[in-house]
Amino acid sequence: AAAAAVGASASASAGSAALSTTVQVSEREREAAEQEAAAPVAVPNKLAQLAAQNCRGGTDLLPLLQRRARSVAHETGDTNGDGLFDVADAGFVLTYITQFNEGFATSLGQDIQARLVSRPYMLVELDGDSNGAINNKDAIFLNRVNVGLLNSVRNVTATAADNGGQCALTLSVTLVARRDQPVDAAATTVLFDLASSDPSFQAVFDASVVSGSALTLGQLALGSKGSPQLYGGLVQAVLVQANPSVFAVRLDPSLAVPTLGVSVVQLTTGFRNFSRFFGGLEVPPFAYAAQLDVSVHGIAFSTSGSQGYNPLVEIAPQASCPSSTAGATTVSTTVTTTATTATTTT
Image (cartoon, rainbow, N blue to C red; front, top):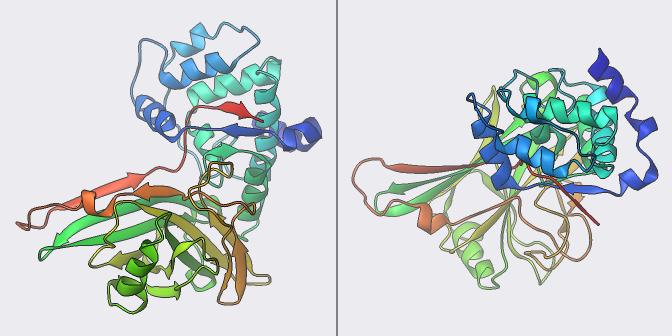
């Protein structure tokens, strides 16, 4: 109840300055912290060390740091650590930003730090849209998930496999509805944005996907992104698992490029149509030099800002593929699009 009260009072405690504050997080550090959280530790774990570095109030966190950082069962979207996902969690994002900006110096800030040590997953959930930054957009997104307008996005996975001497690539993503329920598949469309900063990629995409037959699972959504500065296209995924809801596409053979940028677009229909582009950090430098602003199935969506955008993840399709054709070797890379460290950017 106390945690819910904290979240409910967030809008009152977060001033206009907090709304413009972005807490930038590191994917690599969070993955390390989550791994450490699964086992007892005799010394401060990575998450706790980072929390101490960010605390400008000089609070002695040693008793907390020496405690085991344990995994706690929770619903997706539970930002305040009470185990449940509800409207209080959207408000808690703003509370966290305010306390972070103040160095966690208040009693509330120290309470939040203690929760982060015992519940490392909270930093994963605070970055609701999984773009590597915690800001007011996460609060807005979580509000929409809470009322059933959108779904949380988790586990973007790239799986490369040798198929008769050629490399096949499967991209998948898990969508989670409120209270960890399966999504309404009839009202949900998932797209993968496939991108590169190399102009020659457009010819590769056209030959393989637009006019070719490489897309063996899924279908072409857009063969052009509407800007001469953007290369690649969008493909629509197929629901391959109902609960949890997993959507996937398969390219066989894979796209012959050294690096492929992958982002996710979610479209939902109902009383109102909603869309959400899930990309990387929304600050320069940008991997791609223009805004993506298009429509699919009559629903418009765009990336944030007009200068460009970053992909949610980058993969190396050819490098990931087994070189031997013997057996059914498969190489999988699961990309966790969330993190542990936090620094304030201006």
